[in-house]
Image 1 (cartoon, one colour):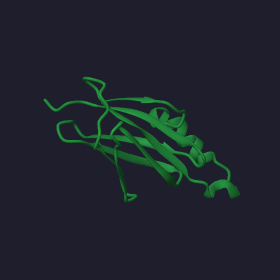
Image 2: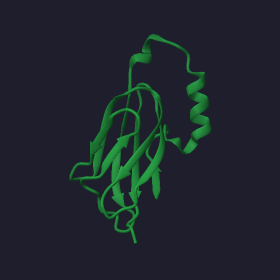
Image 3: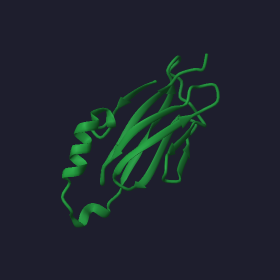
Length: 115
């Protein structure tokens, strides 16, 4: 499984992101939720994966990727989440993601074929 981060909010900088979350000041702006979006592609061919299930565990939020492999979840409260990606014929992937208020987390996830 490979992911690329197209914004600075991806959990690849996990400790840094968690420290940022802890140090956030309280403000009236904290009701503004974040966005988790991206695309899912085959690691082997680079083809976009249509119909991949994207789930933010524990939130009740599930999305199916579009014909172009894209997904977009809006109004996600700030926090650390486990995102699960599953599609028949590919290995299921779980990825920690950090969503920040007022920001978009944009990732590209590469699914590996089951062998």
